[in-house]
Image 1 (cartoon, rainbow, N blue to C red):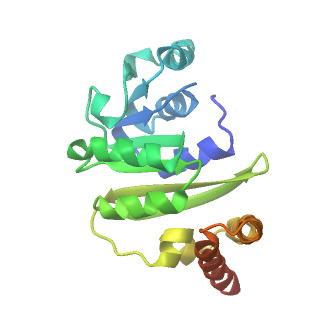
Image 2 (image 1 turned 120 degrees about the vertical axis):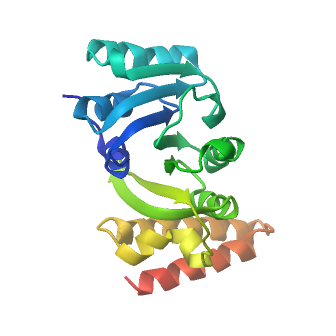
Length: 223
């Protein structure tokens, strides 16, 4: 059986059973191969902008005897997919990259669940999804290798999130999962350090950082 690490296991759990899924930026292919192996997804399209990276996924899927239910595509984003997908994973990239992939492929996402894990700019991705007409329907957080990873699932719909919801996540704020308190405290440490540096250097973003710290402190008080 294919073993997934904590981050990929989180993404696996957020993908619903479906006929067809796609992994954009598939790289090694572990997640997509596990979706096939488990029977959770009938077919998986592995997509990566790098042909050498996609070859790693191809080798894994072939080794696991799952080739009949897999498709491999070299290309950039949703627009490059060969087949419609019920669920699409876009993970391990910065928020601007993920937002760009979603926006360029909007016409193909009317009935698709997006599962996303940005490495940076989680709040920016939430704001972009709201602007593009998506509702965040699930969020999860895990700590692995000394880092926090936040993932979200979104579907077409209208939402109006508050500053706190954009910053910390509407579902995470509601459910307050096990790792959430540690994540809030981590974000506070990072932003306080950034604020101290901004004040010392008389940076223009000091006021914005102070406002964000105040929001995180309000969230911390509610935990």
